Image 1 (tube, rainbow, N blue to C red):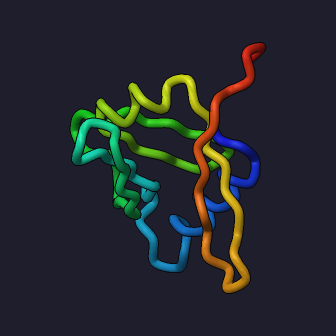
Image 2: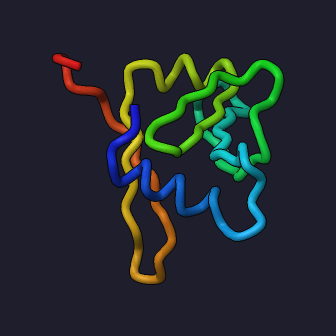
Length: 94
């Protein structure tokens, strides 16, 4: 689940001039959900889970998708305009 701020941040970093039509934020975990890597991707990889919300696309490998299943992704902007992502639990009444 993405907050409105996260939707805006993902759209902002994946929709720049010349960005591929299916560009999205790809989240992977190289170490079984101990840490995550974020990158802009032209589209999903073959086995990615795809999350779309209001024009924002997030692609996750299987382990990342399992970890984020009951989480919410939020974002904030620092003083220089860079997005900072934060993960938290979803509300019980989703």
